[in-house]
Image (cartoon, rainbow, N blue to C red):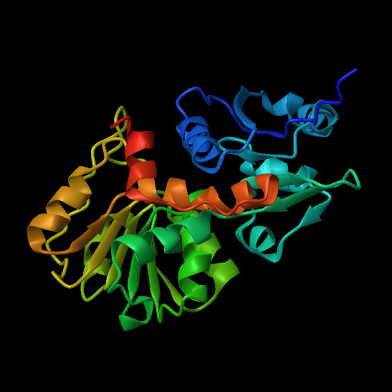
Length: 279
């Protein structure tokens, strides 16, 4: 009788999740590093989430990513929570520990910063105010990472102002809230501008925030990556800004999870990026 080693499994849980590019990313890394592993997309309803998460380790899963709409619920289910996930209020990376406990972390902020460091090497978060469009779960991770990186002020605007006000209450006085109709004004002298909304995404509403106040010296990042170059980034590029698309954040946020689950810290290279793009 042959004793076969148990192949480690991981995956991404969301609803819907069929559109996720993460399985392609992980397959690319498996091939590059010669790792026997599988990464599986799983469409799970909210009511079934805890049952699924408690069952997966028994099937050989070492962890899972969590995406919309389960990031907040996953944090509630977890037994152990990182400081980063607690601060953001959501989890996107779960580790199934040998002791049976679920460890929750949030690597979205890490992915955001790593993407900017790689694709805008001259970016300095301390050089001036940051402007953040949106106040949802992604914005929470971006705000936390910008504060940690030393941004002196973060201006934030959301279509529903109450959500932006709630972030200011949580993260403190370095956040300044603007009404959505005044969102264009907060770009004046901003050195970092980030769109965390779905505006401009394929199938979503058009991005209409006026960019007249944008400075050519600003670094602009859009978390949307379908299309890869959004209207926001195209207009910012015309102004002379350094622009960074959202695909890099997706790639970089996966690095810590892959390392924890499979014991290898992967690199985000142009080859990996092209593979995920289907190039």
